Length: 77
Image 1 (tube, rainbow, N blue to C red):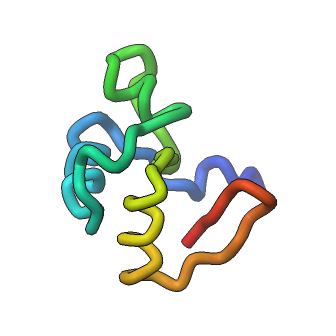
Image 2 (cartoon, one colour):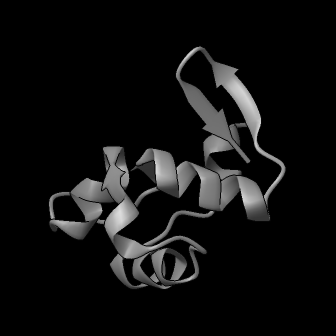
Image 3 (cartoon, rainbow, N blue to C red):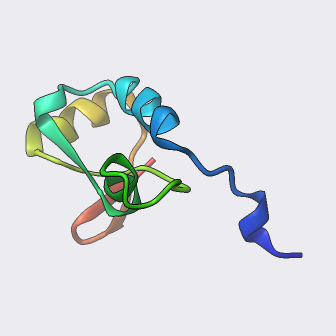
């Protein structure tokens, strides 16, 4: 079974809705990867939302979520 069919992809409206739920200040992050391409109209959909955050934004996320260290310079929920 191909797993790519099981992943719900998000269009631009769904991505914007997800971005609006982020519990951090809008000036403390920016969207990267496929999400940025969807927001610019280059791709129709993205399967996830990747963001880069400032130190302050990271602290805001740590207050709300149990973040797990991905590697030396990354985190995930």
